[in-house]
Image (cartoon, rainbow, N blue to C red; front, side, top):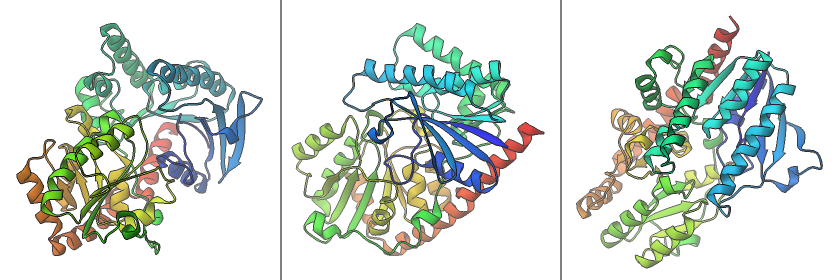
Length: 404
């Protein structure tokens, strides 16, 4: 069996970014499946005189096209990078041989090369839905043109119609798909959430010296490790920090990552007087470096702006926190809030935090017995519901059903 894995942002664990595709792909190889990856990269090490550079690593054959990308680019320039990848990856896919394609969004356009591979290469594809495009991007106001919206919904419908299987990454994403396209209910019946990579986050002996970073010994620490983007709402963390600083100045927030909003977040933290006091903002780190941070802090976190469509997200931060056996803090409702409450694995803040809400959160952080209980519960949920082994098992069933 040979799988072509199409992911524009494929990352190895020594790189910054999510490693779901790597974890799955390398696990498929261990099960005897040949995996060929098609991806883009901004890494100069993969720049080549030829359009495509092919490397073999960890049993994977990775096809890279060098396309510089970053927050320094304008919206138009970033969009152009998407279309360049779409164009070149389509022709690359048509040349590659495989039994089926696994195309994982975002963006939604990742489904177009898979469509052409099916139509002209007679190769079935699985479409993995990481975000409910275009519903989410329209909700945040990123695409306002009505004709463009209609075009994207048409594209979404065509991609779903032609997919052998649609794999949403959360039950809320599944509900969104089924509500809008009830004809695809059977195709989207398998939900495979993001992965709690337990082996990566457990049995970690190393810790970070937080006192060296903060200048004092924190009583309780909250980690945010991810993108500083518009949808992430990191300004909500700063607001929470400002309110809790008055109550307990040894409750600290460690923010690690990069993104278009990072400088704005830093400036906001300085303006509100929390920067360097109970908010500490650091550079991005690789996935391999994350476990020792989670081993150090008291709690992980995931934030989004106050838009209901974003509640369906399946953020790596949520699953990494559980894999580390730490409680998770979020600021929205949806399926993750339900899991937190049902299994007692963290704390759900309202989107807009009042002084009373901040006081309640501080009281929560002082409850050592509850925190200890949630740590145990978090790891248990990670093992039972979101382990890599469980995800691979589900995908193996999907592959077998397609081949049947």
